[in-house]
Length: 143
Image (cartoon, rainbow, N blue to C red; front, side, top):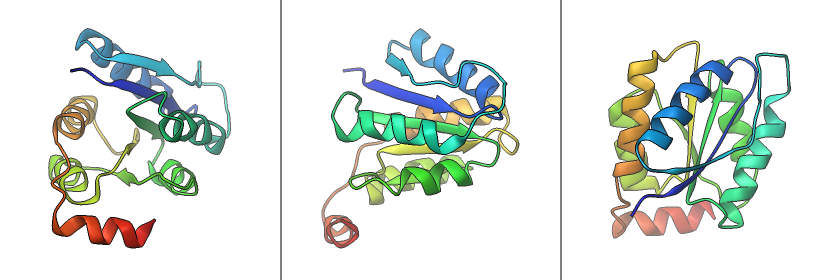
């Protein structure tokens, strides 16, 4: 069953977000685009908050955030209770954060991640299921 994905970016992540959105739609996902809608300068926390709200209110199964480095988005996203956002720069990161951390928001840096790599990271993140078991105790401690 395909997931509902809430996606957002700032101006620096807009172009990559657009490519990811297109990929997701073509792959059969439902995409909730929270903005930005152009490369005009905006503040990344606004979009991180919109996407994470969708996730905690169960309007989306998970979120994807894109800014220039991915760092600001991940920091802002993790401020919301119930969010486990991970900045991923490799397939290993995407797989292990889902397996071990049950991450529910993926953050990407458009200035450091090529489009092909970003799409592969997104695919891995969405395809990997949480392992549970010994990892649940750690997630409980985070919450």
